Image (cartoon, rainbow, N blue to C red; front, side, top):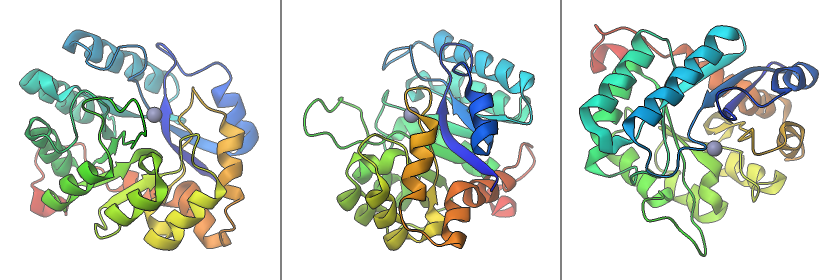
Length: 259
Ligand SMILES: [Zn+2]
């Protein structure tokens, strides 16, 4: 099986040590990465853009093994939008990453979503419902569902099953443009099974959340979910391969043509 890890973070300016060798050993052919870590929740534009430079350098060193989501802080407006455009069109990043600088359904985010739609690019959104310690702009499944309702053409990946699988899966179920990933320490085989049963295997993506997680145990929890061979192939790589195959890096496509 050729696995694709749809949710990976750089450690500093590089992959965590040993990532590619571990991928070789376990069968993960592609790591789809973003930055985020180490800049704080509300990073300045220069820090975000520098981190995207770091990611691009890693992509160039390992073009067959690493793909990149461009991280943006939507509060930076036009400068961030131009950074996003450049990363997709000139540097061939494949998607957009949103974290906790704004809620994902804030109007500040809309221009980024509209731009991502022109590329048919997946949008990986951190989402988490916490019992205590929710950050002020930390999106939950409700915010993801709001965004999906507004932009049915956007290809949205709700990370971590939003931390509370039962309620989160029910909230996104009506929106076929929303996928979820298997990363996150509260997500185990049972949660993967719930997501696949309610959403269909086509909407669940394997993700590890490296470097702050163990690749093998994250693969193990999907293997332990009791999926059929066909479902497993979709979750472990087939779905992400399909999403990546639809990404356009040009400027000329309109939304209508891309769709
Ligand atoms: Zn993450």
